[in-house]
Length: 148
Image 1 (cartoon, rainbow, N blue to C red):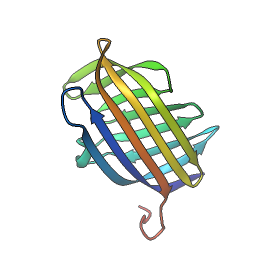
Image 2: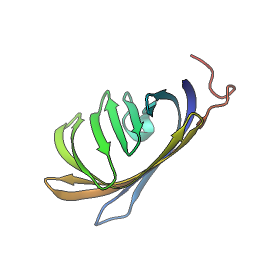
Image 3: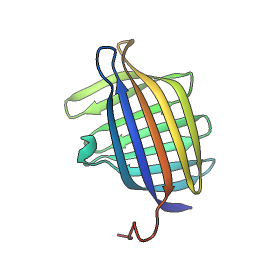
Image 4: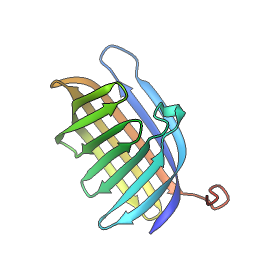
């Protein structure tokens, strides 16, 4: 099963000394069932500042892995109550970061669903910020998503 979907993403970054920064994006993508989970992918755009990057979420029971390939390369593993280390590559260099997932909800089926990820980023074992992803996936209407 592979289908065209509409992906609505709201990302919020919170820092200790400042106002939260939010980005909202609605884009076309693909949802594919694979084994016991799903793969959700889409191309980043200028809006997110990562134009030319393919973002993929591998959604498994109890775990979501975010991979970015292109101008920005990274892989982050989200598992509620767990801390995973990740290499984050940017055009300015690479750094090792800790990803500490506070909350993870991934309810996705063949028709779409919702993903919520609340996590803290740690650099050198100090919290550098807290991020929240809220992602909604729904089937695309044929008239809205012509085949390319």
